[in-house]
Amino acid sequence: MKGITLLEISVIIGVIIILALLAVPTYRNFTSQSDIVNISEEIISVLRLVQNKTLASEGKSQWGVFFDKVTTPHQFILFKVANYDSLDVFFDEILHIVSF
Image: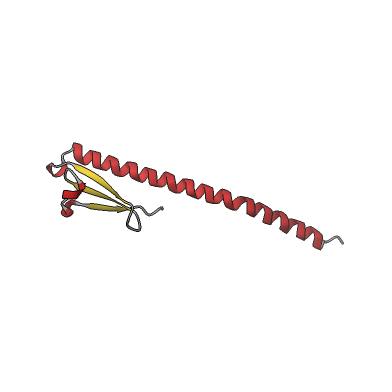
């Protein structure tokens, strides 16, 4: 009767460990790229929303976006007026970036 030797089991475990060590950086790179793509699509979506609100003259005003990198999590603030300093907080829409 033939069996599996301790050496064969050690070689198999070694190969599995090496494959796992090679796969982890690739997985991290993939998730980082995926996060960047998701955030990019979210920014594009917000900019298109603001463009549509301005073109439709929603609220008879212009709309803008303020990218707030100071808060955690980072956020976009959609505001109604010509600039962020004179905004009307009643019309603000705050959207959080959850991926970063």
